[in-house]
Length: 179
Image: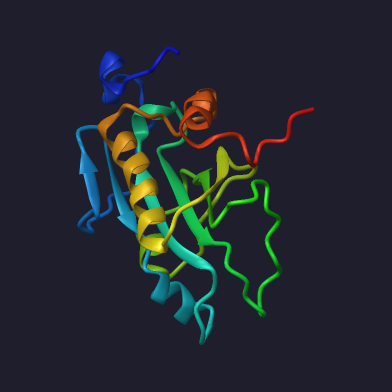
């Protein structure tokens, strides 16, 4: 497996321009990027949603080194526990307890309102990657995803679709349809 590292080309030499400054303290930071936990309470207030949904966490991840156009990504994590107000999930692996998705974000939309929950995440479709996990708790699922986000901000795991094989190597291909 060939592993791309941001340091090989330098984040500023290859990366996408970042048109908006985010002046919020990042939750995670590394030499090649930053990541912020999205304020889910703010999202739920904006949606006038009185009860929590299945979303465990969401992060906006800045990794301009990963692609010449996309500078930021959304990583969303949901639990797959039964919920009478939510459609039952499709399990792609029988032991799945959580699912996460990785999306590129629209590079022309400001990120700070997405982080604070004032605006909906400006995800680009289709997703870059998604997988189901088997974790004993929401906290363990968060640790698993935070480890991947730490690799992104260190520049050792690219969120770009050209490196999907690296994500499959870590998390499996449970959500990838093979034809």
